[in-house]
Image 1: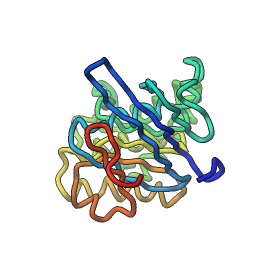
Image 2 (image 1 turned 135 degrees about the vertical axis):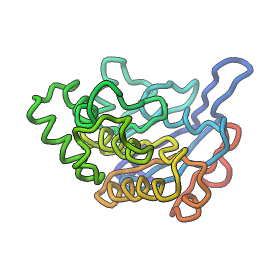
Image 3 (image 1 turned 60 degrees about the horizontal axis):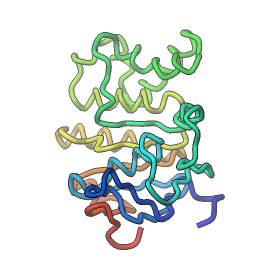
Image 4 (image 1 turned 30 degrees about the vertical axis):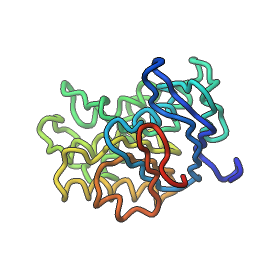
Length: 224
């Protein structure tokens, strides 16, 4: 696949945390622009490490990570915030802030990048509307269900209008109905042209996927 159509490319990527701990081993794969891809594998398979490399949260020990034509493995620290503006990140450790409203949580990425409060509020309300939570804008995160909180996380991830959404186990600990709503929300953004990479243990979700990349002990299983 050429660089005109690929959004994410791993070229012989390995990640070693120590002489005894290897998270990824010689990974080569390509995700096309506008594609929806699921990343499957047991806990410890390397899924989170792979996603963090795309966002330059982790650097490869060997190989290249290319995102939208840019070599992330060589990116300078000063350029990382600009990279992440084009990425919508939904990671387990990025919890909603419980000391402020749902709306304020979604506004935060825009305020950090210099938007006016008026512009940030307008776009945050539009993002909440897209995930079906416009009426909960003034609520506190802890007043929402787990599924609603995850949809707020999606709204926060897409408020910058990213080209890529990275969702690490976005339906973990949710009931089936809530998980389906979260997945439907991500599929809607994908249908609008956003490239989506979603890690999941959920067999029902994986069964319905058009493309699944399987990881096991840091290695690809089958063709990527």
